[in-house]
Amino acid sequence: MTNSKPNTGLIGAAVFIVSESMFFIGLFLAYFFLRGDTTIQIPSDQPVHPSLALPLINTLILAVSVGAMAYAERGIAANKQRNLVIGVTVAAVLGLVFMLVQTVEFSRFISVGFSPSSSAFGSTFFALLIFHVLRVFAGVLFMVIVLVRALMGQFTQQRRAAVQACTLYWCFIAAVWVVVFLVLYTS
Image (cartoon, rainbow, N blue to C red; front, side, top):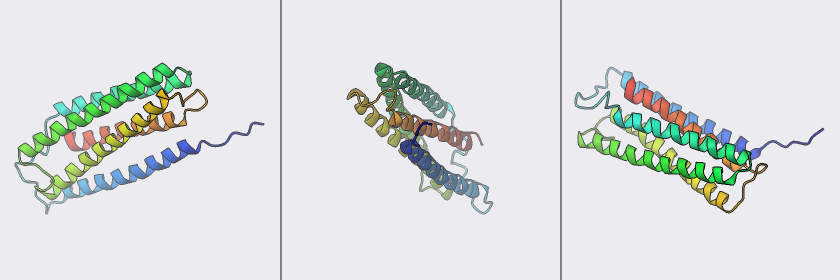
């Protein structure tokens, strides 16, 4: 009989992701409430259905970055340090590119007078986007920590829980983006 201990790092990451999910569910509920409340009028000059170009680019960026993290995780599972480093580096750079594109999107909204202070609807719209970008930033920081540790040779086939947790969190961030995209840009 083997004495296998549960991986507390992955359990902690899963619990954290569940709490983050609850946070986003609260934001989505507020958004839907304000959007559906007939007493709150969305000003006609505010983009209820903004352009899809930049959000689609960001969706593609996150999809490729999830593939890069999966490549990194599979690499270290096969004890291939180089694949780990390449995958995490590509995913982190793509995370930074996502934030840059999102900044351009924020600027575009603000340039047409749509901002968090323009209405209750604008506040929840921006809250969803800003809190998602903050999670992307946290994910990139997590990747940088994993990358530094990988370059120091701290991960092996048997010792890779941090890489798995980082991959899990990054997949969560990408999944939340898909929901944010569908809700804010297509509904």
